Picture 1 (cartoon, rainbow, N blue to C red):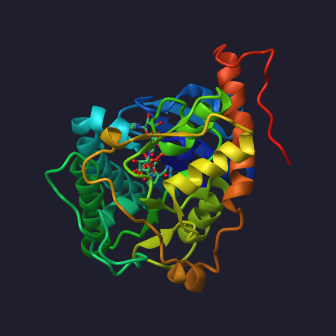
Picture 2: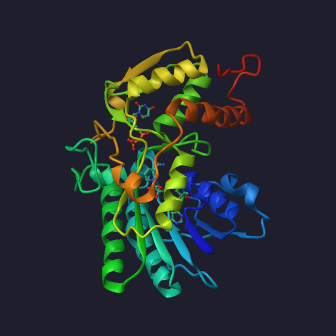
Picture 3: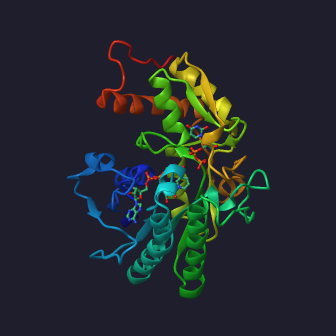
Length: 327
Ligand code: NAD
Ligand code: UDP
């Protein structure tokens, strides 16, 4: 297959490039490097089945030749990013999705949208099944992301129903792993780099809010299965094991041997930060035969070396006191 991945130089997009190339497909990554980096795909440059196109998908998208699938992953994804880039976030979710759908129509390609657990907002139903419509504040700071993704789901379903386009929608829950940006502000890169620097971990609010963290390899497997399935309605892909942020901080400190503990920062919690988040994955289990395989402790162990290397490259880890990962 010849596959276009928008947001292909981002965290998730670059892992998808790796997977589809490994499976023998031809991959075109398209990205304007707004929150992504060429470092994520540097190892693929020169690969005979890989092409990179620098382009903002909010503008008309041109790709020469046939396409069999389009995976639309372009969008700022971390709260810090979309708070700093509110208009770009709305535009890529709305105009970018429209352009990518139009391209899919023109090429007769299957279309897969990267949606998010944020469509459930600060959920009143727990855990969240796909049938839950959500509790979103459209005018709050997170509204730019949440509503853009809700619009993106709506227009994707409209192309499916009105134009008969083959579409898939994955609702991704918090995912982590190597290639997350050090400065993207999300809790996983923040905690790991703080721990490696021997600083206290910054817990926002009271730390009793929960998240369910999924390792990148599990997500990629779920996306591949969904793309090749017949399921046209949204599917949750996430790890249902739920942790409070405080528990997560303690885990990171233990795995890195960080003695500095935590520091509570109530004022840094973003308005409308969801209090709970846990996917109901019974649909993915039933339809895709999928479930996550990598427990949080194992996934964090696999992720720590990436951040250590990044910090060493920046000269931010004291060479005389290398951080250790006890096994
Ligand atoms: P990321 O920021 O690493 O990747 C997003 C990529 O999209 C970046 O490379 C960025 O440069 C690119 N991009 C943004 N606007 C663009 C535009 N207008 N034109 C072209 N490229 C553009 O974030 P990520 O975590 O890899 O997220 C990828 C997708 O997955 C996003 O759509 C996000 O909403 C979704 N998602 C991620 C998570 C998660 O936990 N990581 C959870 C839910 C949903
Ligand atoms: N958080 C935290 N300390 C940090 C970064 C984030 O306590 O240094 C909290 C944040 O308030 C939220 C949770 O961790 O409750 C997850 O935040 P993240 O930005 O990773 O993504 P979200 O799930 O909110 O999209």
